[in-house]
Amino acid sequence: MDQWMSFFKNEYIIELSKLLVLFVIAVIGFYAAKKIILPFIHRFFKHTRIAWDDLLTENRIFDRLLLLIPAMIIHYGLPLVPLFYDFLSRTIQIYVYFVVIIVLNNVIDAVVAIAAAGPAARKWPLKGWAQLLKLFISILGGIFIISLVLDKSPWGLVSSIGAMTAVLMLIFKDTLLSFVASVQIASYHLIRVGDWIEMPSFGADGDVMDISLHTVKIQNFDKTTISVPTHKFLDNAFKNWRGMYEAAGRRIKRSILIDQSSVRFLEDAMLENLSKVDLLKDYLQKKQAEIAWDREEHPGSGDSLLNGRCLTNLGTFRAYVDQYLRHHPAIRKDLTLIVRHLQPAADSGLPLEIYCFVNDIRWNQYEAIQADILDHVLAAMPFFGLRAYQRDALLDGRVPETSGRV
Image (cartoon, rainbow, N blue to C red; front, top):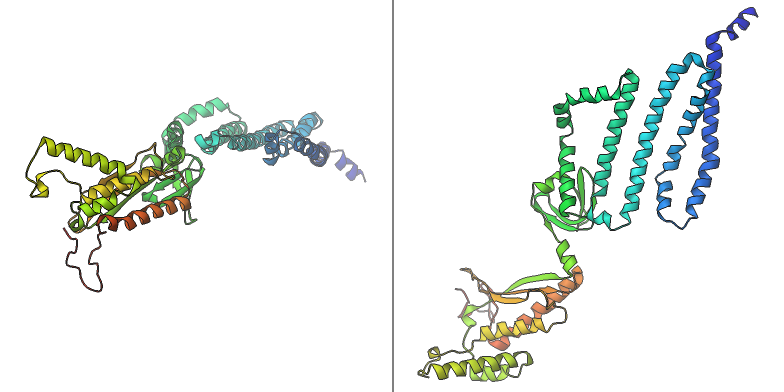
């Protein structure tokens, strides 16, 4: 019996008992706060009219703050266990640093989530900067924790880390490159979330889903996902289609190959028929007046059409297509609109290029408008005595006498 009494009167046993009671109180305090205070906080923010405060609870900021309650209880109970005072005091400080790092990271996530609801999220790579800031906080917190463990000044550790700059730059090379790339991307607005970009070197052709510190996530139109290192956007060429959305106009740049052997001067019968076309009346009247004036100024023999200016079916057709586009309700008149000839290749026809912009940038509608325009242009060619070029085309099962090759 005396041995048991002496055991319980032992200083270490008494201190350990007090410490155990202190830990039990700290755990009870934590769970009491979690079951009572935390639900009250969640209900309070849920019933407010402000939307952003809900993101604070969704990112579990208050859940993490409750982790400080056990530390506070043990801290105020340290005088009861003087035998373990120094050890517990240092342990609590390390624990508090860990909790503070976690809370600050959650606060940064909440700020990014709040900002994501505004227009700034599309212009600035907030997630990448947030990751960099969290990395900085973690490194700084780690320095303070190590200083507590080693019982040294944190600033002395920082100065010693300066001598390891080369090693750190090697370790964090990709992070530093990505940070510089993020700053340049944000400064020049090269990429935003939601942009449609093409990057052939990485097989990327789709919408930017996410911009983080190290990677840019792109969802291709075939629903595959590609992650491209952020710094690669400064080393590789890419195309951003944002300008199309901002201008609200999508470009048509298509060529129709014309059989050059079908190009000829307009005959009187065809000229009479084309004069009935509303889109050509003004053009033909103007051209006929110019030709009449030219013949008066430069009279010559009328035995050959080559002795003076004459209208051609191709030139008239080009004027018709131009007027057709200018009167089309889906074509932007305030943006570039050109119908022009391109240099023909050795084994193809004469390209007649249509260059204009559609006022509907939706993919399905754009393709439908483009197809309707090209269908109409191809169907109108025979009225001008023109033929579309097709290599080795068959006519009634036979090779035509005029193949259209140049």
